[in-house]
Every structure is written in structure tokens, then in C-alpha cells.
Image (cartoon, rainbow, N blue to C red; front, side, top):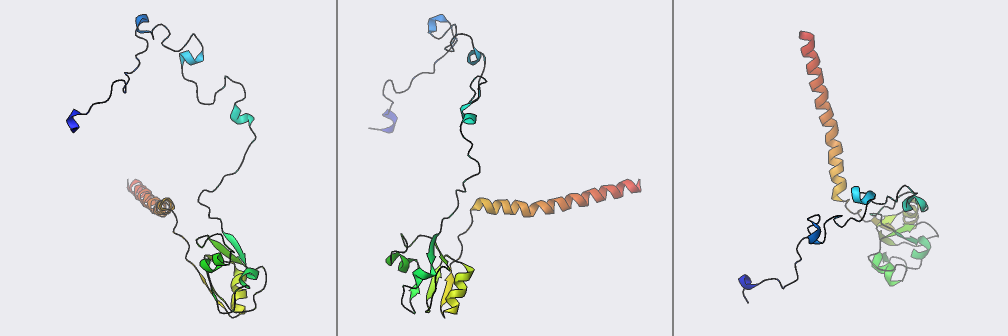
Length: 185
């Protein structure tokens, strides 16, 4: 089978329905739009119900919005960290092994609920300020992982925001030049 011999099977492509081309075409007279009424004479916007209260307004109001880029952190308390022996390196894998996290890749935040009486080396995506103090007070150390890079869209908005004042300053200079020219005349 060669490419130049390929063709579509019969019936796979239907011709466009030509409406309003006479009674003999089967789609003449009313052209498939029915008899009279608003939908015969023009378009009706989506959700319009003839003037009655639309469904979207009859439903309960759900206000606010849901941030789709939000990262949900799982809480890990100091009382959970106290289970580890002194001098242990605690990270996502160690917490998952102790079944304190669902998965080693789960983002978590160390909170200061409970007490820690021995030194640990904690590596976490987030730590509360009180948890940092408690870990250092117990003689341990902590490392907070770098935050994830923001979306490119946000960086573009920042670039536009930075360039906007510069453009405004250029406009101010042009206005002052026009004023100087007017004074000379």
C-alpha cells in the first residue's frame, strides 16, 4: 500500500448540510429552525431562559476562589521528631519510613507542638520559627529547602510591572519637553 493510493472509505465524510436552498432540498422553507420564535430570528446567549431567573442565579452562591497552585503541606510536630534517636538525620525519607508521612516526596512543615530534648539534624521544606528555635535550643541543626520556582507567568507579570514605571517616567519627560516648547513660543 502506497501513500498515493490511500483514500477515505465511503461514508466517512459527509457533505455540509446546505440549508435554505429550496423546498426540494429538504431544508427549505424554515431552514431547520422551526416555526417563529426568538431562536428562529436570532441568537440567544448561553444560559438565557426566556427572562425567568436563570439556573446559575437560582443555585446557591459559592463565593471566593480556589488557588490551583496552592501546595498543601503535611504537619509534622516536634513531638513526632522526638521519636528519632539523638544525632539522627531527619528528612522526608526518614519520616516516611516511620510512617509519619504518606510518601517521601510529600511536602511537609515542621511545627513546634511538643518538646524536643535531644539534638537532631532536620532537613525540611518548611519549618516554623518556633520549631527552628526549639531545634537549635536542643543542640540540633536544621536546613530549610529552597522554595520551588514560581510559574513563568508570574515572572512575566513582574517584568511588566517593573517596566511600567520606566515607561511612565519617559512619558513625564516628554510632557515636560512639550511644556518647555510651549513657553518658548
